[in-house]
Image (cartoon, rainbow, N blue to C red; front, side):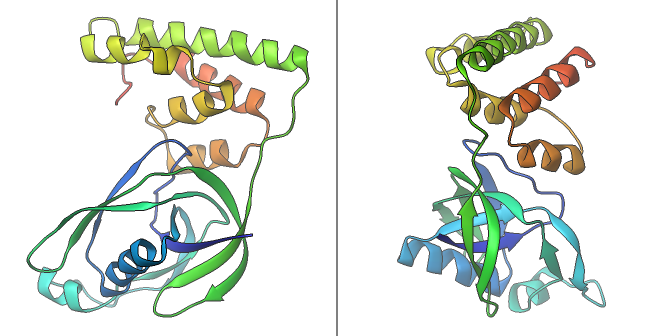
Amino acid sequence: MIEVALFPIPNSVNFPGVPCPLHVFEPRYRQMVRHCIDEDMLMGVCHTEKVVHAITREQTLQEALKSNQATYKPCEIFSAGPVRLLQELDDGRMLIQVDNQVRLKLAQEKQTLPFSIWSCEELLDAALDEEARQVLAQTQEKILQRLLTITHGDERAQAMLNSDHWQGMPAQDFSFAVAGLLSMTPETAQSLLEMTDARQRMDTVLGMLNAMGPVVSG
C-alpha cells in the first residue's frame, strides 16, 4: 500500500509522467503541502465525483486565505507524485508542482482532518504478449506522425516530438504523456486514466487525434 495526501479538485485529471502545477491558498491544503514535503509523502490531485459541502457565499481573497472552501468526494483513480514548492508568496499562498509518477486507486482513508490521507493501491496496466506490444508500437508511431502533422509549422512542438525523449519513450509512458498534451473533457480524461489496457488507451488517443485539427497544446 502507498499512503497519499489527497487534493480533490473538480475537473483536474492528471496522468503519470505529466507534472501538475498548482496555486494553493486554502489553509488545509497549505498544511498538506508542508506535510508532504516534511514527511516525503506523495500528493494525489484528483477529479471529483460530487460536492460534499459547498461554500455558502462568495469570499474575498483574504477570507479564502483564512478559511477552507468546498469539500468534494474524490474520484477513486488518480495520479500522484512528490511535491515541489516553487514559490511561497507573502500572504501565504503557495505555487507548487506535483511531479506525477504513479497511478493509484483509493483503498482506505487513514486521516480525514485537517486534510485527507489515503492508503492506496497502484493501478497497473494488464500485461501484453509480444504480438500486442508490436501493435502498440505501431499505434505509437502513428500517433507521433499524426502529432507531427498537426503541429506542422510549430518549431517548438516539432523539436519536442522529434527529441530522443519522445521518440524513445516506452509505450505505456507515451500513452499517458500524449494524453497530457491534448485538450479534452474531464470525463474523457478520467476515462483514459482509468483504462488498464494500454492498447485501448492508445487507440482512443489516436482516434481523438484523427478527429481534430491543429489544437494540440503543450
